[in-house]
Image 1 (cartoon, rainbow, N blue to C red):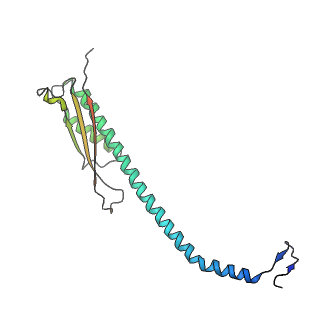
Image 2 (cartoon, one colour):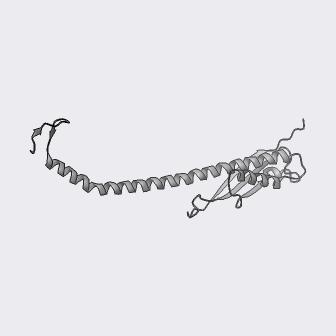
Image 3 (cartoon, rainbow, N blue to C red):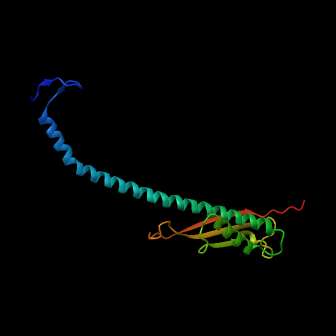
Length: 166
């Protein structure tokens, strides 16, 4: 009954076995190609998501370090002008504590406190109207430890010590 309309309870159909058989063979032979395309696509998507995750974590670490440096400047400004010695140890401790609160490993962190205007005032580098600069250096540790990525992040913040007793 090839090519003849026949009544069917569902509705009229055309019985074309030759075209159906050709379509079935074509779909069956393309199944392997579809699976390979799917696997390659999934691998690519996972690879991109993996690197996006690393980039997000690195950006988060940079933000934490920048905020920690700002916190160190704040501590130096608040404590610096009211004491005779500069609070470098307090600044370093506060920066490391601030970074540790954000789940960062602070063992490799280096904090450098400097006073750029100390050339003008060598006896009192942390006196009023002087600037304070806090630099934080941190070796970035990737989320996936097996990655051969070594990158050092450098963040800095600077502020001016202003002290009013009024």
